[in-house]
Amino acid sequence: MRVFNFAAGPAALPLEVLEQARDEMTDWRDSGMSVMEVSHRSKAFIAVAQQAEADLRELLAIPEHYKVLFLQGGASAQFAAIPMNLTRSDSRVDYLNTGAWSAKAISEAAHYCQVNVAADGAACNYSAVPPVSDWKLSAAPAYVHYTPNETIGGVEFGFVPQVTAPLVADMSSTILSRPVDVNRFGLIYAGAQKNIGPAGLCVVIVRQDLIGRARDGTPAVWDYQAVADAGSMLNTPPTFAWYLAGLVFKWLKRHGGLAAAAERNRAKAALLYATIDQSGFYRNPVDPACRSWMNVPFVLAAPTLDQTFLAEAGKAGLMNLEGHRLVGGMRASLYNATSIEAVRALSAFMLEFMRRHG
Ligand SMILES: Cc1ncc(COP(=O)(O)O)c(C=O)c1O
Image (tube, rainbow, N blue to C red):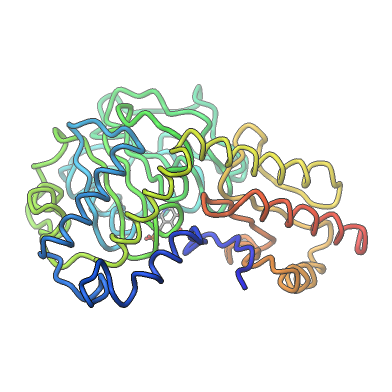
């Protein structure tokens, strides 16, 4: 029996995709082998890889002059690979700090170049995006980095920052949740394990003119130009994760693309925030203007009830609701594969739990 899975990542995958992968597991396309057992350089696998890229390009309307790279090392490796590729050691870069993931990106970048934290959400305990009027952007940074959605804090930008330097976005927990105008970005990156597919893959979408100048000593596997030239197959890629991501892209296309995904995600988030706000028992700490569609942290009126809440939710088939270890409380992640039915079930459970314990 499938449960309702609110995990933050690795996260729920679409059942249709899992069933297809199951059906193809031992005999993929009449090959007598699984997709995991064929060479990444075989014609059949290269077709899978190219189709996945084509479908991602179509979903996000990625212009021709952007490269799409399929990498390993997760989004965390990109925290370092981005400055290795886009800066020199005396370069200045701007970072917006809106929470735990921005902070990690900042501390890694600081090993490579001069980091200016142009805005910091500390003053509001990272419960909102600092007002644009308070940002202290540099005159000509190599790039401006931000985290459109903070997976732990549940803080999301409702807008794309307007900057003159190339804009770099860690979209790990928001990519494919709605349409975005890729032209506004110099580089977008995302770990796969939320809205793309299984862990083990990281997608980088980068404007062509920004690459080809990696600093000396950059490992080839992190040199965007080298990876692009090799079709993301400089070495053995995570073939199964790539294949599965391709199935997820097809699934998204079958279900109306990103505009339809956005409508579903908007409705899911609205239902959960309404349940929280109207309860007087649950509380979400984020400024309503900056609330995430994908990750909804909330606390109960009495933290002593946390374990009871999680245990009873688990019995009701509502899984992985514990908050991140850094912040505690609860968190419901509502990625693309989490249905409105799952959110309705969670909402009904929360109201019922409140009646019994409130
Ligand atoms: C916004 C964001 N950035 C980066 C990461 C790190 O990703 P990875 O574990 O793929 O390195 C995560 C992981 O949850 C994330 O949510």
